[in-house]
Image 1: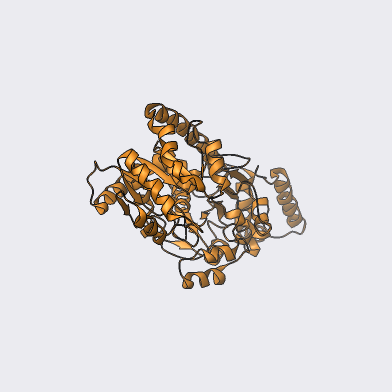
Image 2 (image 1 turned 90 degrees about the horizontal axis):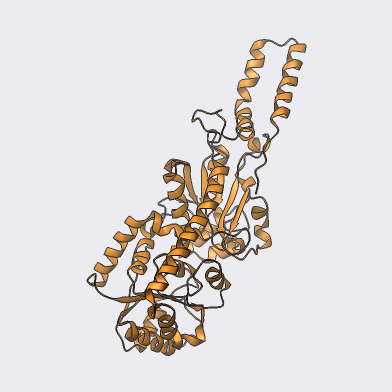
Length: 445
């Protein structure tokens, strides 16, 4: 992960030899100036890398490469959308980049603004062409935004698309077998590749997967200049822990819209519930467990979806559970990141199978219970970042114990629960910012 800078003495020696040769051949000064002019960009790029923080370009900073945030922010899964939102907000608010120096890359070109994402996500082929032909800000640097991209092939990414039209575009626009981790060399033109030194950087931001990398993604990971995992060494928190610090206005507005949509006053109590569509699930058992939570907390159950891509949440599944419930429940249908977080932020408690719903409940100090679907990432988040007294992951076959677990870990001593939660939250924010500072100092020294 330590950047390699080309040797400045070697570069100066090469220039000196070239000049001596030209003088020996009695070339004119005009030819010498012409050669310098034609090779200026390569010379400038090499010097920018040789002298981090140098002043060899019009902006007065050492590197002027644009950066592409590459990740699965091209379909609705609110956690994946959070990665790029957090990174872009930090990069701009801390003066590392301006808005127009940041691009968003996915497996398709799409507008995700209705979901709380970027209005201009670009496909891999479009990114590649822009990087290779940008004579001022190219080749582009890469930030792999996070999530479990280390095991997702282009076929996997294709299967996550919401319709066949976008699925077909994935196949047409793919430039790498790894869906969201394209090797940085693919952004170099032939001219770039012949230049001195590494001309673009790639960094990995709090990746998941426990450090496991599929063969088709290994080149991208093995050639990164900085690597951070959320559940393996080098260990840093998921970037989603920064959400509350950066987006309070968007989340407050989202919460207001949720309460208006629900037709509820601000004093209405509810428990937010999210769970993936589960094979062979027992809707009656889930309904009975949620009825017990509703009675114990004196709150309405509100179902919501964290993601609606294939294999994730299902409103039909919620409807089936709701049909067996005796207590009041509501299915809240939205595919907007800020509304989802707004809903969580105002809840009395949160029940989920999603890692990022768990993280949102954690950063808002909410009583939280996570139903396990055999996902190790849930266990690791609690182990590494949550409080020691937080409710452990529950096996899905034991959902009937949900209220008892929630009451024991949170409601019996709420002040102590919130106090310990705040301490762990502040630690997570501080730790993530360490990683972000490493990234920003590498890309813009």
